[in-house]
Length: 408
Image 1 (cartoon, rainbow, N blue to C red):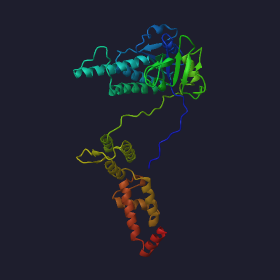
Image 2: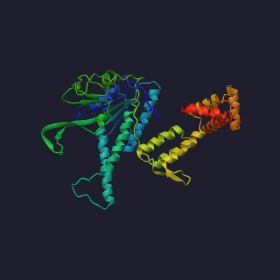
Image 3: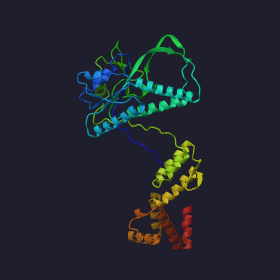
Image 4: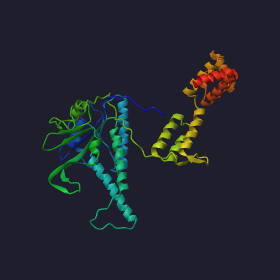
């Protein structure tokens, strides 16, 4: 049985991903450009994704950001994000002010992914020789939605774990409220952030800008904000700036802040993929136990796998066999050392350490200078030899007494 892996919570404020959303011409891009003028931030990189404000806003007093030059394709934009991640990590490691990455906007990002799904659906129809009736929208299948959803998730994970500050803008507006059947509810409006449905969930801070009212801090993931969800109203901030939000409200301290730690689930592995890792020479007994748990959790422990040498059998049996072999090849385990120690005491003739090492060397046929040199197989051999030695040097009556005492 393996003990659970645990750690103490660090209490460190992570670098934020700030969502700035609102209606048209509400100042979303402006406040992002304004942040680049702050002395508290370092290099600022701007990805203009369907908004077109990056060049003009460079004239804002003090603004000092760099515009990412991309070709508009998904692979190029995501590749540029990864390049900025590397720069941000290097700047943080050197103790310099945090790098800022601006994504302007997430609305255009999700629109592009929807267009990709639409284009793939249309290509499928064309490959089947089918034509879409005039005025009718193509039906996008679940697998295509899953594909673009996975792309979005990979991008957001990269942004959420960014080693610096991320500002994401999005459009927001009032829309007609819908009932459970999807029909409009007369006289009622709902507010909608235009983008992927989980965009606001992924942000650590959510700000709404409007041309008609003061900026509003809709939500924060913070122990320092003092705003209780469901109890306190969203905070209006007439003098709002991103610098104030990040460094005064969130208490993000350069030099102490760290990227968010997120364990992201990859695709589930097949039984053979688990077996292939188990077969690698460097996979130790501890890792084999973890692979056995993985096989059980995925329900593939009884699936047939190959050992890549022409033999097949259940994954569970292969891992058990490898565990036995690797345990014998690897260092002796603590339970084996305890067993040997007990047998040395019981034998009674090996109180001196040198005597024990000499006898061990005779058993194994090679020089042993410390018990830490023993493998699992060595330990089993020594244990068996000690048991024989004790049996040969114990009188029958003593063995009976010892057995009776043990039974009692």
